Amino acid sequence: MTKILSTLYTIATVLIIVGALFILQNETYGLFVLCSGLVLNIIYRFTTLDYDRVKSFKILDIIRFVNIFLMIVACFSFMVDWDQKFNFLIISIVLDLLLNLKEISFKTK
Image (cartoon, rainbow, N blue to C red):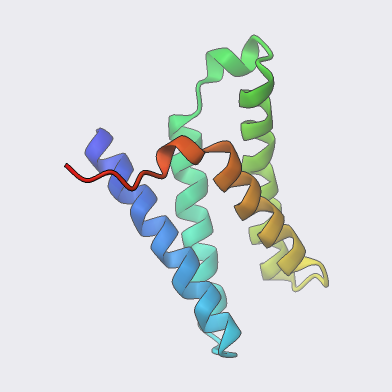
């Protein structure tokens, strides 16, 4: 299961980066690629969240839980074309990276 989850996280990250690059080049399908990466990241975060720690009000896990809903709002904002859609996207991705910094590793085996 961990291999599937790590693959899902890698695919989500690549899709978010590629979607952002397509958006910068004014490609129309960049929003679809970016939103699909966000959806995969949301699925990954929901499956790896420790719900017992959220129920016991551990602050870091509550912030992670709030960040998942911020990613959902960011994805929804692209679908309804809000003015602040890129702000929600940037905040949710940066907060996700800061909260889950230990998942990013540059170690080689």
